[in-house]
Length: 340
Image (cartoon, rainbow, N blue to C red; front, side, top):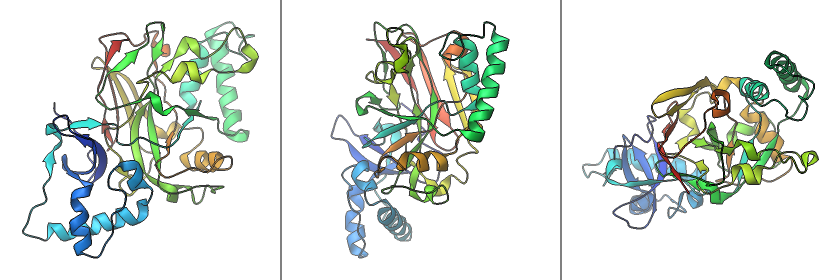
């Protein structure tokens, strides 16, 4: 299968060949080289590449590893001996990394939240608004106030929901409204505790495409409405978090709030929106989360979904659907939906 992993000059991912073990690799021009294959070159130059056995381990020393890797590749490019890159099309492409923690920003795109309020009448807070027009006016006013006075909302997703960028999305047999949510994923590159907005982007290793699949009818629990949203039931089914195809280093993303997110359903465009519609920018999200927890290298922050979800169209994922999520420079996923 032909895979375009990214259009950035350099990216990283996890691969396997002919059913063999998975390995961490660097990608250049859609060609892949195992990080471990660079160890002899690193040693010859008196440099260190640590944790090359997996992307999560490599990210534990991200700043040092990335700087040294670029130096090694530059030196290798001046050599007459070619590096043993392999075409990505000859490899299986897996989730770029298995993160330590997954933090998800809820209700972080202005237009998307307003569309959900309009489409899902009866949510807590909207009981007094019986028409779509009333709910839209309510949603617009609420989002404007939240941007001025509010703070981000974040929750934690399970690692067991991760799947690869070209693996199937398994639709649970008892779920009726599985919905797509393509998002910009932020990969943390060093420990972050009580980080300020001014410093936050210095803690980012790079960016990936994620699809934060949601079972819409399970978000709210009618039996205990006072408990709020049930993200465990709605979000954490196996394969409900496709990530990848590759991790693009932050240096190649000049402005993460100036990217285009797209989603195609069976080739039909459902989402085509800009990341500048975030209510709370990435810097604010990292500041907010790191006030409570210590974010670790290899953690992922999913920054929220733009408008164009299935609930907006009244059309949800079905067996046989092909879901494609993409972001500028970061490549795209292609997942076949199958029934559990």
